[in-house]
Length: 168
Image: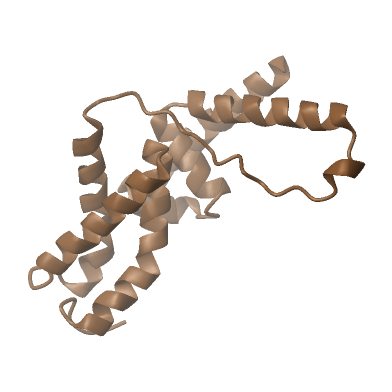
């Protein structure tokens, strides 16, 4: 991609390329999809308002930093609880054993609780890696931390989840 951030086509390409990953990043932080989408739009609005000041190579960093800062302003040090959308489509429910369905739902609830019990730093890294399929390097760049920090957070997250799983 080349050009000026103030050019409509360049800006649209930036939005198409980075909006979903920014929204997911914010969703993992706040657990509220609508809030994550609103902050994503606000971050890109700020990019548009400051397009003359932002060079193209720094545009992704600008929207991620702006999004993170907007989230922090919005949250005001509240405890953040991650919620998953449990509206999953199931096929052939009539053919499945009710006991299995009940156990499956209980396991899903325990898993959601276990992930929400992780520290915010661990949860964000875990979900970016496991849901968005981002590499440790990509996560480090998005969060502006070292790859070693990502590795440590992931290690601690997996260790915590393993301990919780062994208790189930």
